[in-house]
Image (cartoon, rainbow, N blue to C red; front, top):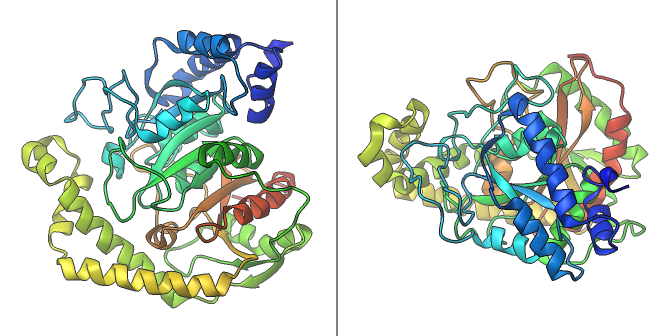
Length: 431
């Protein structure tokens, strides 16, 4: 009977361990077997823990009803895990193991989670890709920079993985790999022990297999009560079509055309989001802030090891050095004004729903796709939930992002949870 639990909902796994139906050691061992089995296809991991079974046995010995007891997680290789190096997708970082967990990892251990290992990231969380392949099509990018985490969860081999986002580092790979992704509101959780790129933009992210799993994990991580599935609060959604930031691909446009009807089926009134001028300014301002702050963050690394860095990262640093401090400060002032306006627009019962990426994952592994559709919302520092389920006729995932205000995360889970089964039930969308 225990063999049925490694791929079950996270809450069911935790309950099974608590009730003695399965041991943490068995469950963690089964997950490791799945990780190992899939790795030749995914290349999602940079390091696996050598003492994962010992950690699971300790959970069995400790007992108690902790919400993630015996549940396996993967950790993006920008985030410190004691005993494993944090290479940040680069050869210029130290190969010495981290001496302590990042605060977010320590929190997951406190909840009973078992760290399977570190997942692949792009170089310093920017554009230069790692070796990871998309679980839906091995010759397509998994996206970046949380590529390993998204591929491992999207392939179903692990139930939870940690990522980060500075531009589109979690929403895009979640969309490309068919995983549920959540970007936590900027500043709502400690990033101590996380290798960052831009202090004003960096956020923690989580990936899971389903929206219910995400709501459960988020509640455990934050200590906030789970939403009541029988209580409906979200009454309307503003449909966002991309504000012409870039060309939205035909398959995603078709999905957006279906979205008002899908929302109606979910009991949510749909209206168009009329905010294009703000969004275009926010997208431009995101680039200004990110490049300016990244240049400062990576200044010493670039000066010491420029020849070992990718051309993409060097170009980011160079452009950021040309951004005057007042330009970045002005962008942040505009951000604050826009965030206040959006708060008024959304009220307590409205969310924004739009494309999480321009389309399905592009073919090829030498680039990670465009983050443009995440830039405005990331500058605003908003929580976002990516909802998978739709697919093209080529079998490639298409994800939507549900966007709201900090403190209203329950609204995101509610809207995403209502959309998720409808997206899964859609016929394949012509590629």
